[in-house]
Image 1 (cartoon, rainbow, N blue to C red):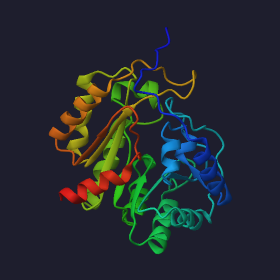
Image 2 (spheres, one colour):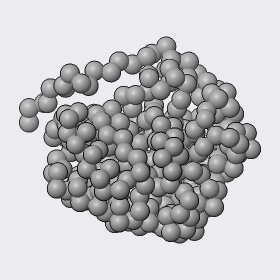
Image 3 (tube, rainbow, N blue to C red):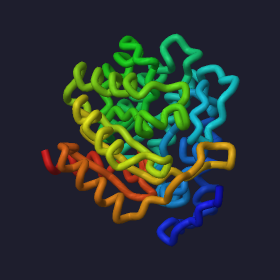
Length: 288
């Protein structure tokens, strides 16, 4: 198959100086970011503005999603000092909005949910005025594990469906679309005051009709916020890119999603789950 030529609107440059400085600070605290692990194209921009998405529970995932650069394999022990170190880093960066995600840890009885709760609680102690957003795995839809996170009361709980259900065998062979919807539904049922959020990638071969149906599915479980971005394969071994989606089409999707009742939608080639996340919660608060 002929390789697609990268379009002119995907030309963001990396800021290596900022990446080095941020990386050194994170390593000194034995912390990781999904920015680095997932090879995010926004990493230089975010690090330059002194923001990052912390990734807890190690650098190795128990699943093998075909779109993701994070390796799968043998996982590390849970670091009991991680919540304290994460809070220390957030304080150093003076973050007004802290985003925490993790690798998927199917090897742990609670899926790592208690570590999420400990990180949230530690952040509350150190930065009581900052808002907190967590991007969680599905915890295999285990309600006790989900309750651990819900009871810690972050402002936003994000769980990405990633793509349309017909492409799960290609992109997320160890995940289940309906299970991801159940996760979002359960969070909203247990605590309606927590904003729920999800995200998808475009360019894997989805049709517009499938994307619109996905919007409907998310709204049926009262998902509040949506991010839509361009899939960029981390390597030749990952799921194949089928299409570069134009900024005009991203804007079209945004308007359709807003018309379906989402409180906030970020849609564009460089949009990622936690990219410019503070803007999302600020917009919702200003409109409420």
